Length: 84
Image 1 (cartoon, rainbow, N blue to C red):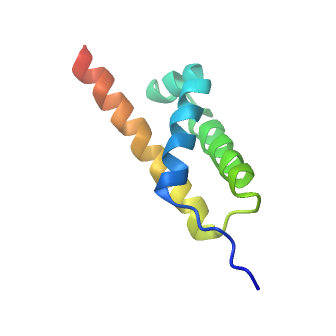
Image 2 (tube, helix red, strand yellow):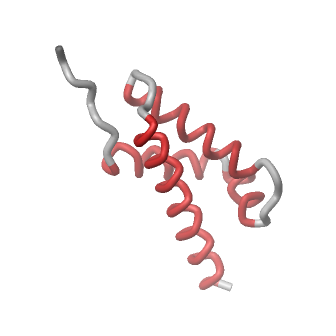
């Protein structure tokens, strides 16, 4: 039996970067703490990861996606605050 390709940061980071570009408006609403922004971005990220891998994510992979997305959002927010 062939093991499925694991989700790695090498796969995940470019995917998240593109997701945040494609959904700039929702990213900024997350920064403004508007309800629903996190759920939308997290759902989009899980769906994109699933599509990239061609399979459903395991529970640990899903948590990895959420954790890494949160990290990216925090880094972006820090950068924007430093630029102000």
